[in-house]
Image 1 (tube, rainbow, N blue to C red):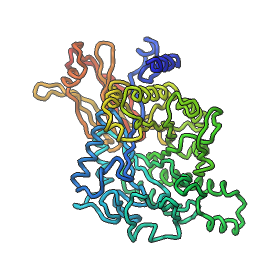
Image 2 (cartoon, helix red, strand yellow):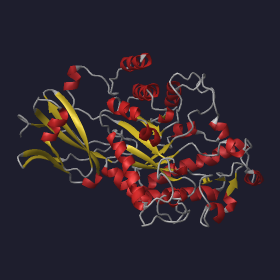
Image 3 (cartoon, rainbow, N blue to C red):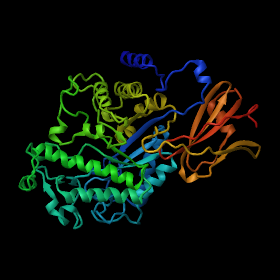
Image 4 (cartoon, helix red, strand yellow):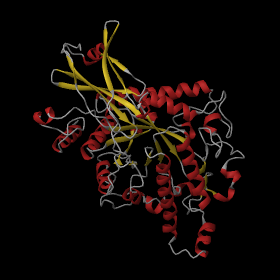
Length: 507
Protein backbone atom coordinates (compact mmCIF):
# COMPACT_ATOMS: atom_id res chain seq x y z
CA UNK A 1 0.00 0.00 0.00
CA UNK A 2 2.89 2.37 0.69
CA UNK A 3 4.19 1.79 -2.83
CA UNK A 4 0.75 2.39 -4.34
CA UNK A 5 0.33 5.67 -2.45
CA UNK A 6 3.80 6.80 -3.49
CA UNK A 7 3.06 6.14 -7.15
CA UNK A 8 -0.30 7.92 -7.00
CA UNK A 9 1.45 10.91 -5.46
CA UNK A 10 4.03 10.83 -8.25
CA UNK A 11 1.29 10.74 -10.88
CA UNK A 12 -0.41 13.71 -9.22
CA UNK A 13 2.83 15.68 -9.03
CA UNK A 14 3.37 15.11 -12.74
CA UNK A 15 0.06 16.87 -13.36
CA UNK A 16 -2.34 14.02 -14.08
CA UNK A 17 -5.40 12.72 -12.31
CA UNK A 18 -6.14 9.11 -11.36
CA UNK A 19 -7.43 8.39 -14.85
CA UNK A 20 -4.29 9.69 -16.54
CA UNK A 21 -5.97 12.84 -17.82
CA UNK A 22 -4.32 16.24 -17.63
CA UNK A 23 -5.61 18.14 -14.63
CA UNK A 24 -7.24 21.49 -15.34
CA UNK A 25 -8.60 24.38 -13.35
CA UNK A 26 -12.40 24.75 -13.14
CA UNK A 27 -12.32 27.62 -15.64
CA UNK A 28 -10.26 25.60 -18.13
CA UNK A 29 -12.65 22.66 -17.84
CA UNK A 30 -15.67 24.89 -18.50
CA UNK A 31 -14.13 26.34 -21.64
CA UNK A 32 -13.62 23.09 -23.53
CA UNK A 33 -15.81 20.13 -24.44
CA UNK A 34 -15.51 16.84 -22.54
CA UNK A 35 -13.34 14.08 -23.93
CA UNK A 36 -13.54 10.33 -23.52
CA UNK A 37 -10.43 8.77 -22.06
CA UNK A 38 -7.87 7.47 -24.57
CA UNK A 39 -5.82 4.41 -23.64
CA UNK A 40 -4.83 1.27 -25.54
CA UNK A 41 -5.77 -1.85 -23.54
CA UNK A 42 -4.92 -5.13 -25.25
CA UNK A 43 -4.73 -8.79 -24.33
CA UNK A 44 -2.39 -11.24 -26.07
CA UNK A 45 -4.15 -14.44 -27.19
CA UNK A 46 -1.57 -17.14 -27.94
CA UNK A 47 -2.37 -20.13 -30.13
CA UNK A 48 1.07 -21.80 -30.10
CA UNK A 49 0.91 -24.93 -27.94
CA UNK A 50 -2.77 -23.99 -27.42
CA UNK A 51 -1.75 -21.61 -24.63
CA UNK A 52 -4.90 -19.45 -24.81
CA UNK A 53 -7.03 -20.53 -27.80
CA UNK A 54 -8.27 -22.99 -28.82
CA UNK A 55 -7.90 -24.89 -25.56
CA UNK A 56 -6.75 -27.97 -27.47
CA UNK A 57 -6.43 -29.10 -31.09
CA UNK A 58 -9.35 -30.75 -32.81
CA UNK A 59 -12.28 -28.99 -31.15
CA UNK A 60 -15.42 -28.68 -33.24
CA UNK A 61 -16.14 -25.44 -35.06
CA UNK A 62 -18.85 -24.61 -32.53
CA UNK A 63 -16.53 -25.26 -29.60
CA UNK A 64 -13.78 -23.10 -31.10
CA UNK A 65 -16.21 -20.26 -31.71
CA UNK A 66 -17.69 -20.50 -28.24
CA UNK A 67 -14.23 -20.33 -26.67
CA UNK A 68 -13.39 -17.29 -28.80
CA UNK A 69 -16.57 -15.50 -27.72
CA UNK A 70 -15.82 -16.18 -24.04
CA UNK A 71 -12.41 -14.49 -24.39
CA UNK A 72 -13.76 -11.53 -26.37
CA UNK A 73 -16.65 -11.03 -23.97
CA UNK A 74 -14.20 -11.00 -21.07
CA UNK A 75 -12.10 -8.31 -22.74
CA UNK A 76 -15.20 -6.24 -23.38
CA UNK A 77 -16.42 -6.69 -19.79
CA UNK A 78 -13.06 -5.46 -18.46
CA UNK A 79 -13.17 -2.38 -20.73
CA UNK A 80 -10.31 -3.50 -22.96
CA UNK A 81 -10.39 -2.22 -26.52
CA UNK A 82 -8.08 -4.58 -28.44
CA UNK A 83 -7.24 -8.27 -28.87
CA UNK A 84 -3.92 -9.49 -30.28
CA UNK A 85 -4.53 -12.92 -31.80
CA UNK A 86 -1.67 -15.21 -32.86
CA UNK A 87 -2.57 -16.52 -36.32
CA UNK A 88 0.85 -17.69 -37.62
CA UNK A 89 2.72 -19.50 -34.82
CA UNK A 90 4.91 -21.75 -37.00
CA UNK A 91 4.71 -20.80 -40.70
CA UNK A 92 1.13 -22.04 -40.66
CA UNK A 93 -2.29 -20.40 -40.69
CA UNK A 94 -5.26 -20.12 -38.38
CA UNK A 95 -7.09 -18.68 -41.39
CA UNK A 96 -7.67 -19.64 -45.00
CA UNK A 97 -4.35 -19.30 -46.84
CA UNK A 98 -2.96 -20.36 -50.19
CA UNK A 99 0.58 -19.69 -48.94
CA UNK A 100 0.78 -21.84 -45.80
CA UNK A 101 -1.04 -24.88 -44.36
CA UNK A 102 -3.82 -24.88 -41.79
CA UNK A 103 -2.40 -24.93 -38.26
CA UNK A 104 -2.00 -28.09 -36.22
CA UNK A 105 -3.07 -26.09 -33.16
CA UNK A 106 -6.48 -25.62 -34.76
CA UNK A 107 -7.44 -29.08 -36.01
CA UNK A 108 -4.76 -31.45 -34.70
CA UNK A 109 -3.47 -32.14 -38.21
CA UNK A 110 -1.41 -29.58 -40.09
CA UNK A 111 -3.07 -28.82 -43.42
CA UNK A 112 -6.55 -29.90 -42.30
CA UNK A 113 -9.31 -27.26 -42.42
CA UNK A 114 -11.90 -26.90 -39.64
CA UNK A 115 -15.03 -29.07 -39.95
CA UNK A 116 -17.65 -27.84 -40.57
CA UNK A 117 -15.63 -25.30 -42.50
CA UNK A 118 -15.25 -21.72 -41.30
CA UNK A 119 -12.50 -19.12 -41.47
CA UNK A 120 -11.37 -18.48 -37.87
CA UNK A 121 -9.78 -15.10 -38.62
CA UNK A 122 -12.86 -13.77 -40.38
CA UNK A 123 -14.91 -14.95 -37.40
CA UNK A 124 -12.58 -13.30 -34.86
CA UNK A 125 -12.49 -9.99 -36.77
CA UNK A 126 -16.27 -9.73 -36.98
CA UNK A 127 -16.84 -10.82 -33.38
CA UNK A 128 -14.18 -8.43 -32.04
CA UNK A 129 -15.53 -5.46 -34.00
CA UNK A 130 -19.08 -6.22 -32.84
CA UNK A 131 -17.77 -5.75 -29.30
CA UNK A 132 -15.88 -2.54 -30.03
CA UNK A 133 -12.49 -4.28 -29.95
CA UNK A 134 -9.68 -3.83 -32.43
CA UNK A 135 -8.29 -7.11 -33.77
CA UNK A 136 -4.52 -7.23 -34.33
CA UNK A 137 -3.00 -10.30 -35.98
CA UNK A 138 0.15 -11.63 -34.35
CA UNK A 139 2.62 -13.40 -36.63
CA UNK A 140 5.94 -15.10 -35.99
CA UNK A 141 8.00 -14.13 -39.04
CA UNK A 142 10.74 -16.80 -38.85
CA UNK A 143 9.67 -19.79 -36.73
CA UNK A 144 9.12 -22.75 -39.09
CA UNK A 145 8.07 -25.50 -36.67
CA UNK A 146 7.46 -25.59 -32.93
CA UNK A 147 8.12 -28.59 -30.68
CA UNK A 148 4.41 -28.92 -29.90
CA UNK A 149 3.34 -28.47 -33.53
CA UNK A 150 2.71 -32.06 -34.57
CA UNK A 151 3.96 -33.62 -37.80
CA UNK A 152 4.83 -31.11 -40.55
CA UNK A 153 2.60 -31.53 -43.60
CA UNK A 154 3.79 -31.69 -47.19
CA UNK A 155 2.95 -27.98 -47.53
CA UNK A 156 5.00 -27.01 -44.47
CA UNK A 157 8.01 -24.90 -45.37
CA UNK A 158 10.09 -27.52 -43.51
CA UNK A 159 9.27 -30.07 -46.22
CA UNK A 160 8.33 -27.90 -49.20
CA UNK A 161 11.40 -25.66 -49.04
CA UNK A 162 13.95 -27.30 -46.72
CA UNK A 163 16.73 -25.10 -48.10
CA UNK A 164 15.16 -22.12 -46.32
CA UNK A 165 15.17 -23.61 -42.81
CA UNK A 166 17.61 -24.97 -40.25
CA UNK A 167 17.01 -27.42 -37.43
CA UNK A 168 17.91 -26.25 -33.94
CA UNK A 169 19.25 -28.55 -31.25
CA UNK A 170 16.02 -28.46 -29.25
CA UNK A 171 14.14 -29.86 -32.26
CA UNK A 172 12.58 -26.68 -33.58
CA UNK A 173 12.97 -25.52 -37.17
CA UNK A 174 13.79 -21.89 -37.94
CA UNK A 175 13.81 -19.97 -41.19
CA UNK A 176 17.12 -18.31 -42.07
CA UNK A 177 16.37 -14.55 -41.87
CA UNK A 178 19.27 -13.71 -44.20
CA UNK A 179 17.78 -15.55 -47.17
CA UNK A 180 15.96 -13.34 -49.66
CA UNK A 181 13.29 -15.96 -50.31
CA UNK A 182 12.50 -16.17 -46.58
CA UNK A 183 11.95 -12.43 -46.43
CA UNK A 184 9.85 -12.47 -49.59
CA UNK A 185 7.71 -15.35 -48.33
CA UNK A 186 6.99 -13.83 -44.91
CA UNK A 187 6.31 -10.46 -46.53
CA UNK A 188 3.86 -12.09 -48.93
CA UNK A 189 2.05 -13.63 -45.95
CA UNK A 190 1.68 -10.22 -44.31
CA UNK A 191 0.45 -8.57 -47.51
CA UNK A 192 -2.07 -11.35 -48.13
CA UNK A 193 -3.60 -10.99 -44.66
CA UNK A 194 -3.77 -7.19 -44.79
CA UNK A 195 -5.39 -7.27 -48.22
CA UNK A 196 -8.05 -9.89 -47.50
CA UNK A 197 -9.06 -9.27 -43.88
CA UNK A 198 -10.55 -6.26 -42.10
CA UNK A 199 -7.87 -6.25 -39.40
CA UNK A 200 -6.71 -3.28 -37.34
CA UNK A 201 -3.06 -4.18 -36.83
CA UNK A 202 -0.17 -6.53 -37.62
CA UNK A 203 1.96 -7.58 -34.67
CA UNK A 204 5.38 -9.24 -34.21
CA UNK A 205 6.76 -10.36 -30.85
CA UNK A 206 10.37 -10.88 -29.71
CA UNK A 207 11.29 -13.83 -31.96
CA UNK A 208 13.75 -12.80 -34.67
CA UNK A 209 16.92 -14.86 -34.65
CA UNK A 210 16.14 -17.50 -32.00
CA UNK A 211 17.26 -17.43 -28.38
CA UNK A 212 20.55 -19.36 -28.22
CA UNK A 213 19.08 -21.70 -25.60
CA UNK A 214 16.99 -23.20 -28.41
CA UNK A 215 20.23 -24.31 -30.06
CA UNK A 216 21.97 -25.62 -26.96
CA UNK A 217 23.90 -22.37 -26.52
CA UNK A 218 25.53 -22.73 -29.93
CA UNK A 219 25.52 -20.07 -32.64
CA UNK A 220 22.73 -19.98 -35.20
CA UNK A 221 23.61 -22.53 -37.94
CA UNK A 222 23.81 -20.26 -40.98
CA UNK A 223 27.40 -21.02 -42.10
CA UNK A 224 26.29 -21.63 -45.69
CA UNK A 225 24.48 -18.30 -45.98
CA UNK A 226 27.35 -16.46 -44.30
CA UNK A 227 29.90 -17.99 -46.67
CA UNK A 228 27.78 -17.04 -49.69
CA UNK A 229 27.55 -13.45 -48.42
CA UNK A 230 31.31 -13.22 -48.00
CA UNK A 231 31.96 -14.73 -51.43
CA UNK A 232 29.66 -12.13 -52.97
CA UNK A 233 31.91 -9.38 -51.58
CA UNK A 234 29.97 -8.55 -48.42
CA UNK A 235 31.94 -6.47 -45.93
CA UNK A 236 29.71 -6.41 -42.82
CA UNK A 237 30.59 -8.34 -39.69
CA UNK A 238 28.49 -11.44 -39.11
CA UNK A 239 26.43 -9.74 -36.41
CA UNK A 240 25.82 -6.62 -38.51
CA UNK A 241 24.93 -8.80 -41.51
CA UNK A 242 22.30 -10.64 -39.47
CA UNK A 243 20.90 -7.42 -38.03
CA UNK A 244 20.75 -5.83 -41.47
CA UNK A 245 18.69 -8.79 -42.73
CA UNK A 246 16.14 -8.25 -39.98
CA UNK A 247 16.22 -4.46 -40.27
CA UNK A 248 15.49 -4.46 -44.01
CA UNK A 249 12.63 -6.91 -43.49
CA UNK A 250 11.02 -4.77 -40.76
CA UNK A 251 11.22 -1.68 -42.95
CA UNK A 252 9.65 -3.52 -45.89
CA UNK A 253 6.82 -4.87 -43.74
CA UNK A 254 5.95 -1.38 -42.51
CA UNK A 255 5.95 0.12 -45.99
CA UNK A 256 3.98 -2.71 -47.57
CA UNK A 257 1.26 -2.53 -44.91
CA UNK A 258 0.87 1.20 -45.50
CA UNK A 259 0.79 0.74 -49.28
CA UNK A 260 -2.14 -1.65 -48.91
CA UNK A 261 -4.12 -0.09 -46.03
CA UNK A 262 -2.66 2.96 -44.36
CA UNK A 263 -4.84 2.71 -41.24
CA UNK A 264 -3.63 -0.81 -40.35
CA UNK A 265 -1.15 -0.35 -37.52
CA UNK A 266 2.16 -2.22 -37.33
CA UNK A 267 3.36 -3.07 -33.83
CA UNK A 268 6.38 -4.89 -32.46
CA UNK A 269 6.86 -6.25 -28.95
CA UNK A 270 10.59 -6.89 -28.60
CA UNK A 271 12.51 -8.18 -25.60
CA UNK A 272 12.42 -5.45 -22.95
CA UNK A 273 16.16 -4.68 -22.89
CA UNK A 274 17.95 -3.30 -25.92
CA UNK A 275 21.43 -3.83 -24.51
CA UNK A 276 22.76 -4.14 -20.94
CA UNK A 277 23.81 -0.71 -19.68
CA UNK A 278 21.05 1.14 -21.53
CA UNK A 279 20.31 2.82 -19.21
CA UNK A 280 23.25 2.40 -16.86
CA UNK A 281 21.58 0.36 -14.12
CA UNK A 282 20.14 -2.28 -16.44
CA UNK A 283 21.55 -5.81 -16.59
CA UNK A 284 20.26 -8.77 -18.56
CA UNK A 285 20.23 -10.39 -21.99
CA UNK A 286 21.56 -8.46 -24.98
CA UNK A 287 18.91 -8.81 -27.71
CA UNK A 288 21.05 -6.74 -30.08
CA UNK A 289 23.83 -9.33 -29.86
CA UNK A 290 21.77 -12.50 -29.23
CA UNK A 291 18.55 -12.09 -31.23
CA UNK A 292 20.16 -9.72 -33.77
CA UNK A 293 17.22 -7.39 -33.20
CA UNK A 294 18.14 -3.72 -33.28
CA UNK A 295 14.79 -2.73 -31.79
CA UNK A 296 16.03 0.77 -30.90
CA UNK A 297 16.68 1.44 -34.58
CA UNK A 298 13.13 0.45 -35.57
CA UNK A 299 11.72 2.85 -33.00
CA UNK A 300 14.17 5.62 -33.96
CA UNK A 301 13.27 5.23 -37.64
CA UNK A 302 9.51 5.14 -37.05
CA UNK A 303 9.09 1.74 -38.74
CA UNK A 304 6.31 0.96 -36.26
CA UNK A 305 3.04 2.57 -35.26
CA UNK A 306 3.22 1.16 -31.76
CA UNK A 307 6.14 -0.24 -29.83
CA UNK A 308 5.59 -2.59 -26.89
CA UNK A 309 8.82 -3.72 -25.21
CA UNK A 310 8.18 -6.70 -22.97
CA UNK A 311 8.78 -5.09 -19.59
CA UNK A 312 7.88 -8.19 -17.61
CA UNK A 313 9.77 -7.14 -14.48
CA UNK A 314 8.55 -5.35 -11.38
CA UNK A 315 8.82 -1.70 -10.41
CA UNK A 316 11.36 -2.45 -7.66
CA UNK A 317 13.59 -4.83 -9.66
CA UNK A 318 16.67 -2.63 -9.46
CA UNK A 319 18.53 -4.17 -12.41
CA UNK A 320 15.40 -4.65 -14.52
CA UNK A 321 13.08 -1.92 -13.27
CA UNK A 322 9.83 -1.40 -15.18
CA UNK A 323 9.77 2.44 -14.96
CA UNK A 324 13.52 2.78 -15.58
CA UNK A 325 13.32 0.75 -18.79
CA UNK A 326 10.11 2.49 -19.87
CA UNK A 327 11.75 5.87 -19.41
CA UNK A 328 14.73 4.82 -21.51
CA UNK A 329 12.59 3.53 -24.36
CA UNK A 330 10.62 6.78 -24.28
CA UNK A 331 13.87 8.74 -24.65
CA UNK A 332 14.45 6.77 -27.87
CA UNK A 333 10.95 7.42 -29.20
CA UNK A 334 12.15 10.23 -31.43
CA UNK A 335 9.34 9.85 -33.99
CA UNK A 336 6.60 10.06 -31.37
CA UNK A 337 5.08 6.65 -31.99
CA UNK A 338 2.78 4.93 -29.49
CA UNK A 339 4.82 3.40 -26.68
CA UNK A 340 2.55 0.84 -25.05
CA UNK A 341 4.62 -1.50 -22.84
CA UNK A 342 4.00 -5.21 -22.46
CA UNK A 343 3.05 -6.18 -18.88
CA UNK A 344 3.20 -9.62 -17.30
CA UNK A 345 -0.18 -10.38 -15.73
CA UNK A 346 0.84 -13.98 -15.24
CA UNK A 347 2.67 -13.18 -11.99
CA UNK A 348 -0.31 -14.42 -9.99
CA UNK A 349 -3.63 -13.29 -8.62
CA UNK A 350 -2.75 -12.34 -5.05
CA UNK A 351 -3.05 -8.79 -3.76
CA UNK A 352 0.67 -8.06 -4.14
CA UNK A 353 0.74 -8.95 -7.84
CA UNK A 354 -2.54 -7.20 -8.57
CA UNK A 355 -1.11 -4.05 -6.96
CA UNK A 356 2.02 -4.45 -9.08
CA UNK A 357 0.04 -4.44 -12.36
CA UNK A 358 -2.11 -1.51 -11.26
CA UNK A 359 1.01 0.41 -10.25
CA UNK A 360 2.58 -0.25 -13.65
CA UNK A 361 -0.53 1.04 -15.43
CA UNK A 362 -0.51 4.18 -13.28
CA UNK A 363 3.20 4.75 -13.92
CA UNK A 364 2.63 4.37 -17.65
CA UNK A 365 -0.15 6.95 -17.53
CA UNK A 366 2.04 9.40 -15.65
CA UNK A 367 5.11 8.95 -17.87
CA UNK A 368 3.28 8.76 -21.22
CA UNK A 369 0.20 10.98 -20.84
CA UNK A 370 -0.18 11.77 -24.54
CA UNK A 371 -0.66 8.15 -25.57
CA UNK A 372 -1.47 5.86 -22.68
CA UNK A 373 -1.67 2.10 -23.10
CA UNK A 374 -0.47 -1.40 -22.26
CA UNK A 375 -0.45 -4.92 -23.69
CA UNK A 376 -1.14 -7.70 -21.19
CA UNK A 377 0.53 -11.12 -21.36
CA UNK A 378 -1.56 -13.16 -21.55
CA UNK A 379 -5.29 -13.88 -21.56
CA UNK A 380 -4.61 -16.74 -19.17
CA UNK A 381 -3.94 -14.28 -16.36
CA UNK A 382 -7.29 -12.57 -16.89
CA UNK A 383 -9.13 -15.89 -17.12
CA UNK A 384 -7.52 -17.41 -13.99
CA UNK A 385 -7.28 -14.56 -11.51
CA UNK A 386 -10.53 -13.10 -10.21
CA UNK A 387 -8.74 -10.59 -7.99
CA UNK A 388 -6.85 -9.28 -11.01
CA UNK A 389 -10.06 -8.86 -13.00
CA UNK A 390 -11.73 -7.11 -10.09
CA UNK A 391 -8.70 -4.92 -9.44
CA UNK A 392 -8.66 -3.72 -13.05
CA UNK A 393 -12.38 -3.04 -13.38
CA UNK A 394 -12.61 -1.38 -9.96
CA UNK A 395 -9.43 0.61 -10.58
CA UNK A 396 -7.67 1.83 -13.73
CA UNK A 397 -10.07 0.20 -16.22
CA UNK A 398 -13.24 1.34 -14.48
CA UNK A 399 -14.09 3.66 -17.35
CA UNK A 400 -14.18 2.78 -21.02
CA UNK A 401 -11.44 4.18 -23.24
CA UNK A 402 -10.85 4.87 -26.92
CA UNK A 403 -7.70 3.72 -28.69
CA UNK A 404 -5.43 6.79 -28.98
CA UNK A 405 -5.31 8.22 -32.52
CA UNK A 406 -2.30 7.68 -34.81
CA UNK A 407 -2.01 11.17 -36.25
CA UNK A 408 0.97 10.35 -38.49
CA UNK A 409 -1.34 7.97 -40.39
CA UNK A 410 -4.38 10.22 -40.62
CA UNK A 411 -5.61 13.16 -38.57
CA UNK A 412 -8.75 14.05 -40.50
CA UNK A 413 -11.72 13.76 -38.18
CA UNK A 414 -14.94 12.18 -39.48
CA UNK A 415 -18.03 14.28 -40.03
CA UNK A 416 -20.42 14.87 -37.15
CA UNK A 417 -23.25 12.35 -36.73
CA UNK A 418 -26.81 13.44 -37.32
CA UNK A 419 -28.39 13.27 -33.85
CA UNK A 420 -32.09 13.22 -32.94
CA UNK A 421 -34.30 12.53 -29.94
CA UNK A 422 -37.26 10.19 -30.45
CA UNK A 423 -39.93 8.62 -28.28
CA UNK A 424 -40.60 4.89 -28.41
CA UNK A 425 -43.18 3.30 -26.12
CA UNK A 426 -43.02 6.44 -23.95
CA UNK A 427 -39.24 6.05 -23.62
CA UNK A 428 -36.93 8.75 -24.92
CA UNK A 429 -34.03 7.63 -27.10
CA UNK A 430 -30.96 9.43 -28.38
CA UNK A 431 -30.53 8.30 -31.99
CA UNK A 432 -27.82 8.98 -34.52
CA UNK A 433 -26.79 8.27 -38.08
CA UNK A 434 -23.82 9.14 -40.25
CA UNK A 435 -23.41 9.93 -43.96
CA UNK A 436 -20.24 7.80 -44.07
CA UNK A 437 -21.18 5.07 -41.61
CA UNK A 438 -18.70 2.55 -43.02
CA UNK A 439 -15.87 4.82 -41.85
CA UNK A 440 -17.10 4.85 -38.24
CA UNK A 441 -15.66 2.30 -35.82
CA UNK A 442 -17.17 3.51 -32.55
CA UNK A 443 -19.58 6.11 -31.19
CA UNK A 444 -19.22 8.17 -28.02
CA UNK A 445 -22.40 9.35 -26.32
CA UNK A 446 -21.74 12.16 -23.84
CA UNK A 447 -24.36 13.10 -21.23
CA UNK A 448 -24.47 15.82 -18.61
CA UNK A 449 -25.99 15.88 -15.10
CA UNK A 450 -25.91 19.31 -13.50
CA UNK A 451 -22.44 20.57 -14.42
CA UNK A 452 -20.76 17.15 -14.77
CA UNK A 453 -20.24 15.24 -18.00
CA UNK A 454 -19.90 11.48 -18.40
CA UNK A 455 -19.78 9.28 -21.48
CA UNK A 456 -20.49 5.85 -22.87
CA UNK A 457 -18.59 4.29 -25.78
CA UNK A 458 -20.77 2.25 -28.11
CA UNK A 459 -20.02 -0.05 -31.02
CA UNK A 460 -20.20 0.50 -34.77
CA UNK A 461 -23.64 -1.12 -35.22
CA UNK A 462 -25.32 0.75 -32.35
CA UNK A 463 -27.82 3.39 -33.46
CA UNK A 464 -29.54 4.58 -30.29
CA UNK A 465 -29.33 4.81 -26.51
CA UNK A 466 -32.28 4.86 -24.11
CA UNK A 467 -32.19 7.87 -21.80
CA UNK A 468 -33.71 5.74 -19.04
CA UNK A 469 -30.75 3.35 -19.33
CA UNK A 470 -28.38 6.29 -18.99
CA UNK A 471 -30.16 7.49 -15.86
CA UNK A 472 -30.12 4.03 -14.26
CA UNK A 473 -26.46 3.53 -15.10
CA UNK A 474 -25.53 6.87 -13.59
CA UNK A 475 -27.26 6.03 -10.27
CA UNK A 476 -28.17 9.67 -9.75
CA UNK A 477 -31.35 11.63 -9.20
CA UNK A 478 -29.93 14.69 -10.95
CA UNK A 479 -31.78 15.19 -14.25
CA UNK A 480 -29.96 14.68 -17.52
CA UNK A 481 -29.73 18.15 -19.07
CA UNK A 482 -27.46 17.84 -22.12
CA UNK A 483 -25.98 15.26 -24.47
CA UNK A 484 -23.75 14.89 -27.51
CA UNK A 485 -22.74 12.11 -29.89
CA UNK A 486 -19.42 11.85 -31.71
CA UNK A 487 -18.10 9.41 -34.33
CA UNK A 488 -14.67 7.78 -34.11
CA UNK A 489 -12.90 6.42 -37.20
CA UNK A 490 -10.50 3.49 -37.66
CA UNK A 491 -7.44 5.65 -36.96
CA UNK A 492 -8.89 6.98 -33.70
CA UNK A 493 -9.95 10.43 -34.89
CA UNK A 494 -13.08 11.78 -33.19
CA UNK A 495 -15.63 14.07 -34.82
CA UNK A 496 -16.50 17.54 -33.58
CA UNK A 497 -18.42 17.79 -30.31
CA UNK A 498 -21.87 19.39 -30.56
CA UNK A 499 -23.90 19.84 -27.40
CA UNK A 500 -27.70 19.38 -27.34
CA UNK A 501 -29.79 20.66 -24.45
CA UNK A 502 -32.48 18.77 -22.49
CA UNK A 503 -34.94 19.92 -19.85
CA UNK A 504 -35.85 17.41 -17.13
CA UNK A 505 -34.41 14.56 -19.22
CA UNK A 506 -36.80 15.39 -22.06
CA UNK A 507 -36.22 17.28 -25.33
